[in-house]
Length: 140
Image 1 (tube, one colour):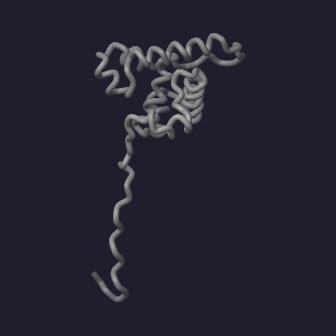
Image 2 (spheres, one colour):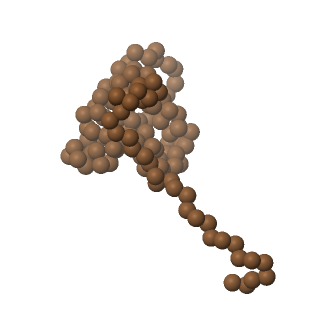
Image 3 (tube, one colour):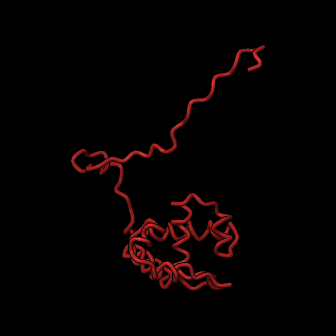
């Protein structure tokens, strides 16, 4: 059973592709190119070949980070074990960070006031008030 999710998604219009992955098609193509180049430079190892295409391997990362899906659910979609999904997501993340193309600016750059244009705050995880405990002996 070979999964070709990327082949199907790559035929989507740009807006729907971004809606699914959270990344523009052009940026995703850069990701595929960077990972492909890294894999070609890497010394070939003994063992099994990859079950998934590079596009499908890269698609796992946005599914994990963007949709908050569990590794088990992603693995079920791709026909892999949880540990293989975790290793693949970590490998893709590492390759993209090492490329330098997707690095975020360092702390010093962020602290200099002249470079900050917008600050966004994620408030989706705000705590809610707990109900008060009823006094002892009360049966409400």
